[in-house]
Image 1 (tube, rainbow, N blue to C red):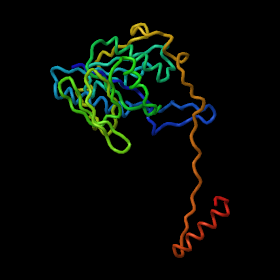
Image 2 (spheres, one colour):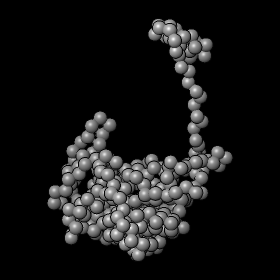
Image 3 (cartoon, rainbow, N blue to C red):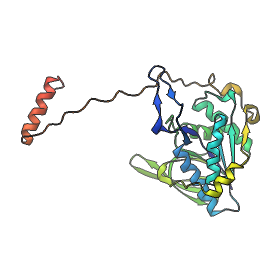
Image 4 (cartoon, rainbow, N blue to C red):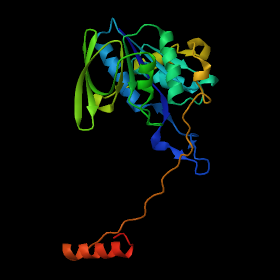
Amino acid sequence: MRIIVCVKQVPDTNEIKINPETGTLIRDGVPSILNPDDANALEAALAIKDSCPDTTTVTAITMGPPQAKEMLKDCIAMGADEAILLSDRALGGSDTWATSNALASGIKQIGSYDLIFAGRQAIDGDTAQVGPQIAEKLNLPQVTYVRSLKLNDDCLTVERALENGYEIIDVKMPCLLTTIKELNTPRYKTVQGIMDSESADISVWNADDIGVDKHTVGLKASPTNVFKSFTPKPKGAGVYVSGGSPKEKVQILLSALEEKHVI
């Protein structure tokens, strides 16, 4: 079985700041990490590989700048067999639609596969669009928000999370699944894995290598525009009503709301 995992290098959101004048992310000095939902996707692939180690290979694929190689090395250190980086100035500035065009072309270039995993969404965009768009462009069945899965020959039985529960779906391979954190706990990198990742040959493909139409990738081809990003202003301190009986506290609260013309 050949499994492909779509991953992304993202800035650590715990360290993110926004330039108040330009509205853009301040990336200088901000560490980059493997997108958390993608780590769950990779773990799902590796768990299948653990059950069938002699017949399963896991390939991690991403689109990004040259430094994304470091994130791909982390994927190999966790247990992926190979990694592919799509990197080209022609791909820069792609929104979700253009990104999915590039990744779908890259996956076609890989060749045959049985299963594609992707994280639900990236923490630097929170769109949850790229995975489903890839499935559409590859004409694959897809199940999103997967919280549990079971492999049965050429079919998967998955639990898809809903707001108030879950639904059970049977889907035939090849297919694409997007994963959520409830699915599993990603494993740590091993010492041997880290050593192997340093000497791993990570393939770097440009736009010509994957045969993508350059009119469908990059900033100019992206129909989505972000007009403004900003950090919400912190809320003012609240008022704590203390002393007196509950009835007296309610009266104090009502009086304060009336003064502010809230009621």
